[in-house]
Amino acid sequence: MRNRTSTNTLRRQLFRALVATFVVFYVVALLGVTMQSCQVRQQVEGLRQEVEELRARNQELAAELEYVRSAEYAEKVAREELRWSREGERVFVPVPAGGTPAPTATPPPVGASPPAPAAGSHWGEWLRFFLRRGVDQSAP
Image (cartoon, rainbow, N blue to C red; front, top):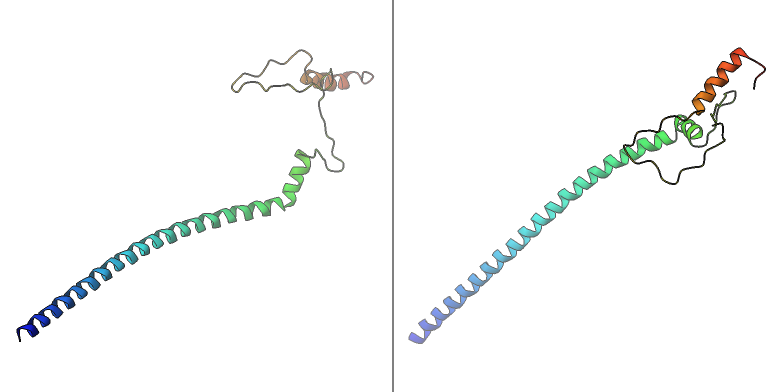
């Protein structure tokens, strides 16, 4: 009988060891799933923020596209970049006395004061043009 009780005790200890092993395995697995769930929530929140930023950018681009398709933008490009004018408009372009100046190789430094107007600058030419026209019609 003693053999039988030691066998029962051994079985109970083995059963307890198996239950303890399964409980530990379950707790470890549950912790892993919880950590993965937390990471997935963080990714979802990051993606939601990205979606909101992209929606805002999409609205900006839609407004810009609407403006680019407008007649106002077409006229602005035609006037400023293509140098077009409407029919019947007069465009005045002042030209210096010596012709068109050659472009400079380097721009002036930032913060530098503009150079003083040279004698015979285009403003003087405009003034002479308009004043001469009013006084003497024969002079070109």
